Length: 468
Image (cartoon, rainbow, N blue to C red; front, side):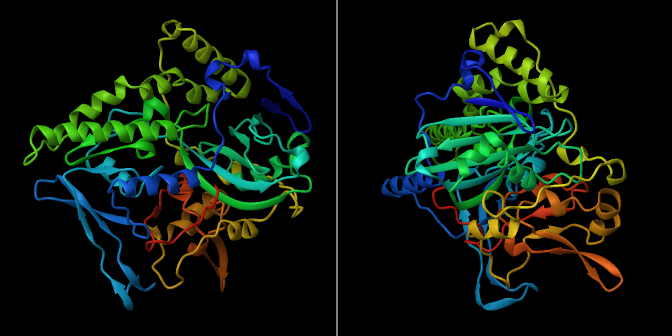
């Protein structure tokens, strides 16, 4: 089902009007976290070494600038940078090729992209934040296999996004809300938009007499085909969401992440087979193989959907539907153009003085909740005495620029309450509650001054997502 929401009503788009690309019949609705855990066991059974609890924190280069692997983060370093009795230095993990598969806005991937200018020919990457909850609902409201998507309310004309709801097994429901990070109003809170979305009459009914059991958030690549950088560099490549292979209208990217990993592995194997002792530093075939795969075709068909949203939900949806229908019918050549993305998301905010504050409803603690209670359900944990992994390039900027110009939007775009403006005597200061961080990377993306740099915390730290 696909609904367009107004404040108190919903309008169902008939299934026959939806492009076949949006068809979910015959698919499985499962927990990706559980799938990954299962895949980990299969990989280890094949001899793959997996290092849970270790984060890749630095890139290794040789004297010619070729990537030779990564270094894992040090363990047992105190908040002030001193070595404690638990100290253990990071390990060097070397390889003939290194695949970067860190997901959206990878802390090392963005360094690689900059180091080798991989994005010089592509549009700026575009992002959204997806906030997700797992519920156990009343059996009478549950319909295993039901997929529900919405657009429209509660987002305004200056913000776009949508929702999903997947009815899983055992009366569980995955519900989530996506807000595109090119929104303009600095007072918008993606978290609060999600909470009031659940109170819409067409949505609220599913959560009567239900129990929320998990919470999480993560940034999503939305640039599509236009924003994919060059994938190969001396000594390795980008795969999955480190490059950005998400199909935006379908809110799906796992299929493309898996396929690009497979294609990169096959290309690397061929290079190593040609000359095992001294293989080429570039996995050249991967650059071609992904363009000849279903990944390219998948993204080509929807390339104009995201940039078309700049015309608003009505015209944007008509344009998107026309593009997808013609491509499904094999008539994509009638729309040969490719719309470009404009500025990066951190430049989209209006100044606070030009913006209207948003009055969000009070949480009822039954269907809508505060961020503190939500972070608790994320199971996030960071050792209190470890260095803060949210690094400010300039400590003065949050007060002297963000607060004055944008009324500190980091207080609102973070879905975990990490950033607070506090009083220090007669002055104000930014307080970073890094222990709350759920590793969504939104701050690294949306900060208007690009002053926040997300780096890897001590290995094993972060959220714990069972069944998510």
